[in-house]
Length: 205
Length: 205
Image (cartoon, rainbow over all chains, first blue to last red; front, side):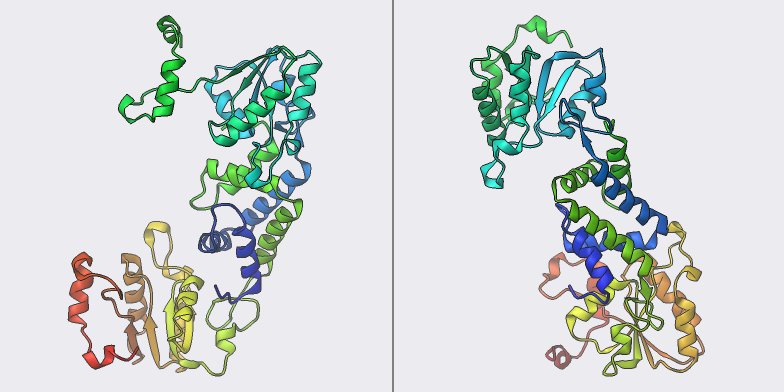
């Protein structure tokens, strides 16, 4: 694209660095900002800079937080002995939204993915195993995405915890509530039969 | 959405003000920025602020420009007597990309759209009619989108220019190059028959 203004070109270039935003969309967004009051642009820019400069990770669970200890870890009503291992803050928010979980979290910050150059040392796995060795945790729930990378990460952590005698579990994979059987994929359907639960249990929630 | 961090919440809120970006996408973009080096965020923010603060509109055609007169208006090789009326800089870029146009532009900054609260006074129509009355222009080419708003704007300007004796034209509407007739809509096909051109002319480009 040929821009009549270097300022515009630079803003579009930077905007199009964001994932899923191409040059055309970036131009549309930037032109939209130009039509809005100047405060909107300065609020957007300042909130991003502010976040990037002052962002903190909870010292216990590595979730994004404004305080040294996040709200969940600081809440005395939550069960600190049960820890749910998730990829990032979006998974924490998704699980919190269910209202079904009262334990703590441990945010890995990603999944092991050699293709993307992410190894175990870039994640917070070491901090997790240390917490386990200190005997503070009774159960670990793996709640990573059911993908190759997610399974690899689960297995890597599982191996690291060998010998600690800690109880580990993984969230149930099965047919989604409301789904029709005939459209379910074979792997999911197979797992949901293998891991069937007593019928009485399904009446609880 | 319930955020564990006010900083994150504010950044996501501001990001989701952009058109076509909902809360979920905004969160994905903001989390992406957090994973990138800090420079990327500061470059994005600064380029947006810089653009918003220092943006200039060409004093002749109202296109976005870094200089008092945009590159096109300042170019002595371009025909200043022919003026193509467009909505915004994206249309200028699209027409420039064809390499077929050597005249000037006049950027309206939008279309008349009562539904969106945009009236003639918010556009640069007055500046255009003044240029015409000063006798500097020989032909005006309307190149707005072929929508209700575009047609309304064309007609409004056409009415404003009544009595000036200026030549006005509009870009041809017709079947796109490469399109199959049977899939064309009736209005377009009808117009392309009414406005048929001598066959020799179609061999030129």
